[in-house]
Structure formats: C-alpha cells, structure tokens
Length: 311
Ligand code: GLN
Image (cartoon, rainbow, N blue to C red; front, side, top):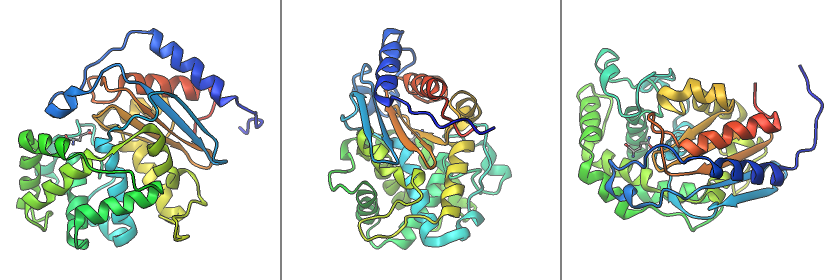
C-alpha cells in the first residue's frame, strides 16, 4: 500500500516524544560490567535526526559524547565488506542467534563460525580480518571512521578500552575459543586489543547520525567522492542490522520500531530509514537484553507517530 507523502514537523514530533519519555520512569540499569561505563550519569538522554535533505534536529544531550560500544561493529563490518567483499561470509554467518551478545554456546556446534557479525564472537572475527589487512589497525580504523563522519574530532577512550580489557574474561575466552577452530588468524591478544579500542570509540548522537548516513543515503560519498558501499552491499548491511542488531531482542526491535538499527551497551542506538533519514538516540540505562530502555521507547514512539517505518 502506497501512502500519500506527507510533510512531517520533525522538530515538533521529536520534542513532544522526548518530553513524554522523560516524564516517565527511567527504567533499567547502566552497564556496570565495564567499570568505566558505570561512571556515566544515568539521566543523560539525547536524540538526533538527520534527513536525506541534510536537515538536522536534536533534543536533550544530543551533542554529548558517549561510548558507542557495539554500534562500532557496523562500521568494522562495513569496512571489512568493502575490503574483502563476499569472502567475509565464509568466516561469519548472517543468521540471528537468539542469544545474548557475549554468548559462547553456539560456537562449539558451529565449529567456530559465529552466527552473525554483531555478536561479540562475529565482531572479533571481523576485527581479525582488519588486523590482517591494516598496517596500523587502530590508527587506520579510526581514520576511516573520521572520514565517514567528515570530522577529525572522533577518538578512542583509552580509559574505557583499558577498563574493558581489565575485566574482559569472557571476550578473551571467546577469542581464544574461535582461535582454537582456526577462525582467528592473528594472536588473540592483538585482536582483543583492537576490539576493545573499537568498542571504546566515543561519539555524540549528532556524530552518530552523520556517520551512519552512508547506510541511509544512496548518494552518500566520502570527501574523496567515493561511495562507502555499493547499493547491494548497503542493502545487506541494513538487512543484518534488521535481523541481528539487537541480539536476542532483534525481533522485538523490528516489531516495535520497524527500522534497521544497532545498539551498544553504552546506551546508544542508531537506526536508519534507507532513502529518508538516520536517527541516533542515547540513554545509558539498559533493559535486560542490554539495549537502551529510553532509546527503544523513543524510537518506537517516533516511527509510530510519524508512520515512517520500512514496513
Ligand atoms: N564491548 C562490549 C563487550 O564486548 C560490547 C557489547 C555491546 O555493546 N553489546 O561486551
């Protein structure tokens, strides 16, 4: 069914929903398993919408930087896809796992092939590919992300990376386990060092919505005039975000919000409406599945109110 195009007053919609969500209880809990993340003020809440016409609307703490954590896995996947093409699918699958992001259980029966690139296991295999490819993985990856954002003001948080490394027993187990199947080529220590840094990247909602425009805008080009991914590859990344972006809550996010998206335990969520806009939300308190409580609530109200969803 083709609905009539209508003009939406995005500023008004964003402001109204923002105030509604803020007036309700802020449920959930901050991720404390990474000690450094526990220091963040739980009441932070920001949203930024960036449209195809380059109109930008922000509310709340939309310009405050936070730890993007697993949202970075979309960026590493996109770069690996750009570099290696379809070869990457030999080492990581594209199936929803139905398990938490840090699960080990399916790896044994799947012979070290992670179910998808957004679980920690899959992201580590992607990191391993980038470690093999780049001369200086940390520097080169950051340069690529800055290029996407068209800003040099994007950095790792050494404090967060160090904090996660100091308690990352499960991630170390995951990486070593995959290595035992031969699906990690480099030394686990090096891959994990890169992985922890990648997850520690800090961005604001404003920057996130800018960075992820390459998945929303088919005409997006970098400063050198190149596409990041062609349309077919863009479709595939969006499809994996749709089916796997929220771990064992991916179905729920699709059901409630109806957009491809990705969350991180820092409380960030980015979602794209291909051909229309990119939206980023941040609120640090997470639900039991590790996804931002207020972020999900906001996005559900946003797509419902605007009647803009890919479904
Ligand atoms: N760095 C985090 C971890 O490995 C990323 C998890 C997430 O954001 N879901 O546990």
